[in-house]
Length: 149
Image 1 (cartoon, rainbow, N blue to C red):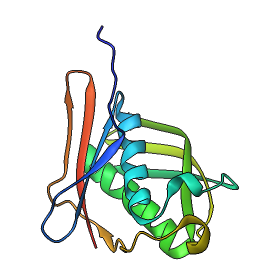
Image 2 (tube, helix red, strand yellow; image 1 turned 60 degrees about the vertical axis):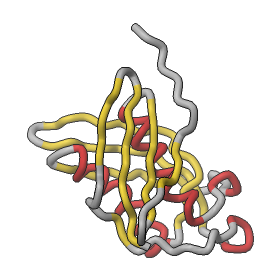
Image 3 (cartoon, rainbow, N blue to C red; image 1 turned 30 degrees about the vertical axis):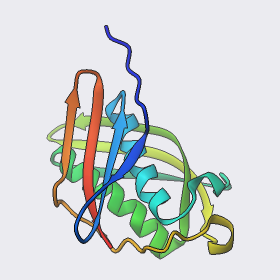
């Protein structure tokens, strides 16, 4: 069995009008977690978020693409509607139950504060399916998706 090592958890790729986020992981769960960190870190500095409040999230999808869409969309909703800034994903689990995928996560964060967490100048309006890819090459999972800004 080959040892898995990722060079970086996520990066931002060029896209004409929106933002493409590419995340990596040795497991599907790690890649989904890094996809979430990439989303959040595009807006504010995740490293400045203290783990003051824990929320449990469950999303479902008929395939991995819909699961990813619903995962990022839920985190965007939590930021917009509840002012929740993601800081740490304590536990993330993805499994197939019956005919759908289920993601359950325990995430930590706090109320978003522009003065404390910063604001990188761009508001993410929505998650999209545009150019979405979830693939495994050798031992590395790679997730690519575009958000509307």
